[in-house]
Amino acid sequence: MTRVLSLLALLLVLPLMGAAAPSVIAYDLAPVMRDGELTAVAVTLRFRAEDEGETELVLPDSWGGKDRLYQHLEGMTVEGGTLSQTGPARRLVRHAPGAAVVVRYRVVNAYAGEPNAENDNPYRPVVRPRWFHLLGNAWVVQPVLKTRQAARVTWTGWPADWTIASDLQHAGAGTLDIGGVIESVALGGPDVRVATRRIPGGTLRVAMRGEWPFKQGDFAGDVAKVITAQRDFFDDVEGPFLVTLIPVEAPEGWRSVGGTGRSDAFALFSTRGDVEDDIGGILGHEHVHSWIPGQLARMPDNEALDYWFGEGFTDFYAWRTQLRGGVWTLDQYLAALNEAFREYDTSAARTWDNVRVAEGYWTNRDAQRIPYRRGAFLALRWDEALRRGSGGMVDLDNVVLGMRNQVRNARTPDDIPGVRSGLTAMMVSKGLDPTADIARYVDAGEVIPLDGDWFGGCLVIETARVAVFERGWDPANTKEGVLNGVDPASPAYAAGLRDGMKIVRREGGVIGDSRVKYVLRVKDGETERVIRFYPAGKARFDLRTARLASGLDRAGKERCRKAIAGI
Image (cartoon, rainbow, N blue to C red):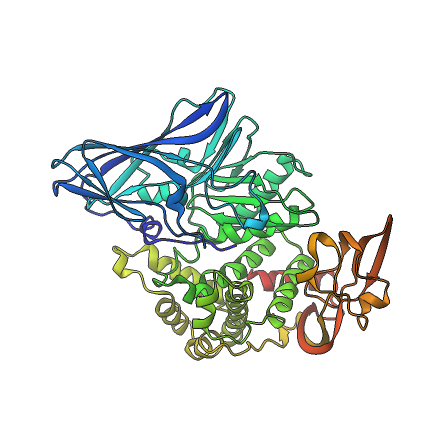
């Protein structure tokens, strides 16, 4: 899933040279309990007002594809001033100049029951009787002050048997500001367990609740490998890191993994099945967001226009660093690349122009996924072109690390280049102008050409004509798993599938890939049957596939791994 960065988060990377003494904004979070069960989280916000006589309060509103987040805040009151509403997500406090202002409100549960994958990722507040999960974007009320806003967060009155894990606990004196509070995650409850591991420059904490089919210690070790590989590559991040993992409910047969990156943490949400590999992929992607895009460039006001960079380059470097650090094998890399080809080559949005993709990003699944694929494929294309043009002396890593250094040396937000200008300038300095490619393959939506030999000939991308994916029944009219609209001309019908059978579970197959045999366990009356077929329609399309060159021995495969990993 996507990571949304704000200008506030962007400011975290800038040196605060000559800044005035900060106003301290203090948040205290306390439980509201009834009969031993949590009903809300009470927030007390304290700040010293400035001299204008009024301060605007900004409530959570739209973030991560969710809107009206303010509706989960209740009972707001103010001491030290008077409160009025100026908009759905705006309040105004009128006060004496320099007044000590106290704002109180409660954060309540946003869901009917436990979080469910049918509702997408639980970005809204989760406040359950025995646990809570809060992303700062969904609970922080921000006073708008002119001075730099240092912040402090405390936890008061929580039951002794509850464990709270939050990246807000990382902050030392004077190191946290309002952007860091907004970019936070917090998980608490009596069944929250925390495992720690060493990582370069700090300590990793992995906090999770609920029962899982894997051991927490093994999971923490895998997370540490991912973070170590990526910190080693970028070689500039120190400090602690937190990963939270919570279970989400789902209909039978569903498998869902999602997450969102925070400034020094990320939050994961998953069904409890066999999802460890899926979680690893999400982890690899989300942790790269520690650098891309915020530490490489300034995203536009409409960030979706440049998600091909923010998300696509993130995918490319998640794959590269995990291969580089030994977290992935070559087979796992090829599996990720081929899944990207399958998704891109079958997407209804493959040839949509960039404006249309941005407009549909939060409402259309195809539009949401295309920027990931466009950016990763352009990164692959440019990495290869830079390497060939320089005789192996330069690749995309030089561009990305150069962009990072530009941002690191920026003195003000205005000194940070935008995505397109910063990327173009750095690539031109390395011998390749990407302007035409961006115009054709991003803005106009032309299909990105990727065929032939790559990485010195050790990887081959081929195109084959394959059948479109068709289940063979009407999923829109298949209610509660009872099949309807089975096509008599389909392979599913030929294999024995009929209207009225009830799907127990899918035991094989890949949605969207007609080349992989579908295996369904169905209930036919009182009898369970297993039916196997290829979900192939009559239409055909071009699908690309990556494979290793033929005849590579063990040493050749290792050379290929290093080439793809940029070593």
